[in-house]
Image 1 (tube, rainbow, N blue to C red):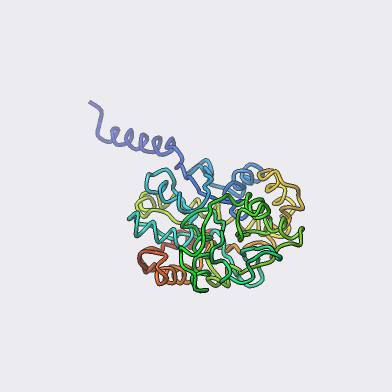
Image 2 (cartoon, helix red, strand yellow; image 1 turned 30 degrees about the vertical axis):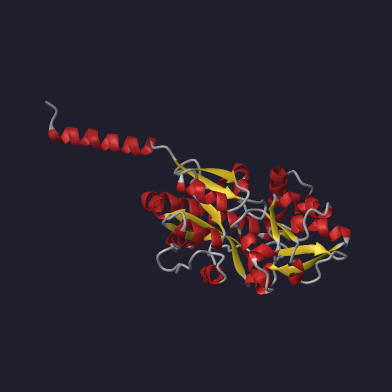
Length: 337
């Protein structure tokens, strides 16, 4: 018979061995557009600068997943096919109220309308029939997805101008196709969500801004990271590792001395010439928090306004239940110590 003390020692070795051989946690991370959203850039940065991602491949692995907008991510989150959603405020609200998911706001993706940075806008032809927002009555608008931040901003702006849902037509299209659609007179107004897409409009001299994102909803959280509460509870320690690496990555991209290397990464992913993406990570780009801190007040205000205009079935109070910024706080404490 093996002595109890020896059995205990064998069990301890087994526990250590089991922990050491545990598979890294799979984190599927949503994105819609890059370089506005950094998700597909992260694996390339990790390959070229592994020191930025100290925990990648050890406690977690990362899998960027492309979506046409934030609403389809709700289905993926509900089905357990996505761990980290890149949602807009309206999609977050719909995930909670319609899909009945217990979601948490956990970090910043990007913010629009922040003074001194790029602000998304809706473009129309200078010589076209739409001179004011009210002129959109009977016209066609392009969006990327129903329920997306773009859709919400369009609806809010048009409702404020006195137009109802039946007063105009909405057509879904991918962001890279927006310019071609308005050029072909298939729509009358299109969203321009980044300097990358704005270049096409600028060089022609034929377009102007009908309204900006900030004019529609004020400075806003255009994209936020959201996760299910049960997943956070089950993997919180590993998620802090991820946020530490992610915060380090965002700071690396924003560091001016890394600009050339950062743009080279963007080019390797987007296959675009430097002049098309050189704006990235400058004041010509959207704002990203170096500490991953989202503007919870702006998220709450947009949800409340959308509910008041009947664009959402009901309003929700985000804090404290639906906000968990503890993981990014712990990650920041690690980096800044």
